[in-house]
Length: 141
Image (cartoon, one colour):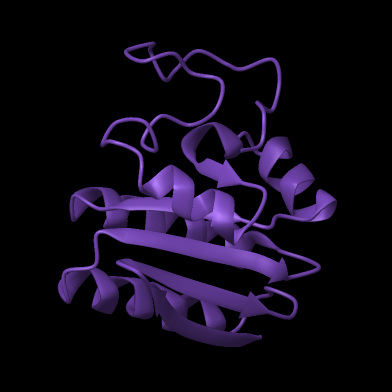
């Protein structure tokens, strides 16, 4: 897997390319997200445009990255999920914990909305308990 980090406006964009499989990618990505948060990044987009497949390593990275970002007071949006990656996230009930955008522009729009809007994953009303299981994957932005 190839990993590239760039900045657009005040958002860090972590672009992933290749299959997200077991190996050294997970720990490296976790450290990269931690380094971005330690440097003061408050808006993060994880771009999956060139990721055809994700396994449990990738899922573990996403769960850990969400906690790291949340604990730093930052916000994160997943962008460009293909059907396979989205299905895997749905199958393990992880989509409910992430803001998901159709592309980079939509992700930037979400992150530039007032605090609280991008923090509520699709399908949840403000203040609704998070333990409630969603029946639909929610609309893409």
